[in-house]
Amino acid sequence: MAKTRVKSDSTSGTNADSQGLKRLGGGRWQSRDERFTIEQQSGRWVIVDAEQTDDLGLPLVRGPFRSLTDAKADIAEARVAGPAESPLSERLKEAARDRKAASKQRTDDAGDGGKGAGARKKVRAEPEATEPAWLGALESADRRRARQAIKALEAAGVRDPEGIARRDLVGDVPAIAAAAVASRLATVVTAAEDRDDDPARVAEGVVAALADGHDRDLDVRWRLVDGDGRPIQISDSELKAALDRARKER
Image (cartoon, rainbow, N blue to C red; front, side):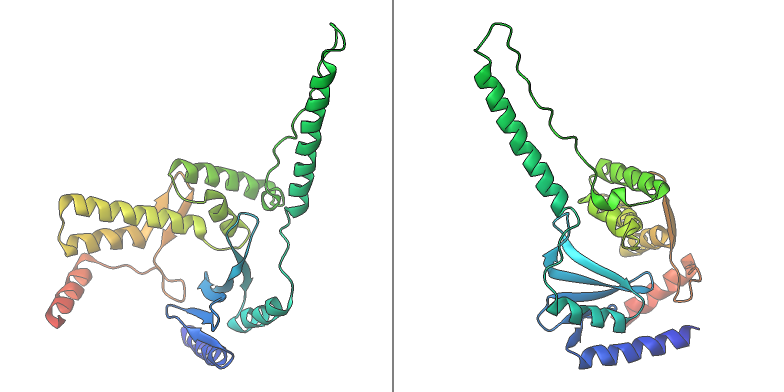
């Protein structure tokens, strides 16, 4: 099974290079004008469009796609199509109209207030805040999980919690787990810096953080696997032997 996938990736890579994409390494490709970047995430492909943004102001993420060929085809379509309109654009326009009308109403009521002692100001209520369209479109269980994840990410001080939750639940990219792993690795590294640990101890901490983890607040688990989804277990002796080899080769 693994050999078949490797062959498919190699063939796709050749086609990508022949159609104006350059290899960046790490399973990533980029168009010659650097507008589009293709990345492989969770066995699928996504396109990051540097010239367009989503409703959160982030670079627009297209996909996911089943193959690199499908991603290339979408790039060709994106070049000839007009800018993608945010699904919130109309809602934002309506909110702006409501705010303008409410402001005018308050001004009119203030002007009428001096006509009689019993005159009352009629202040129109501000429109209620609405959730993003992508969040409202989710199933109830996913919507509840998205709200919990956004709240937990905000509490952890993670940048752009809404964007992370959207990429995870709408784009099918494990962005929440990635944020949890990044936080865990940052904890390992900063703790090692405080203790002035040697590289071997730092490596052990990184391996332990990546191999099998769980973040209760974000309700995500992760583990290190190979291309066939089999868990990779690295023992202390294997890590020590690898470090010894690397030191001898320096």
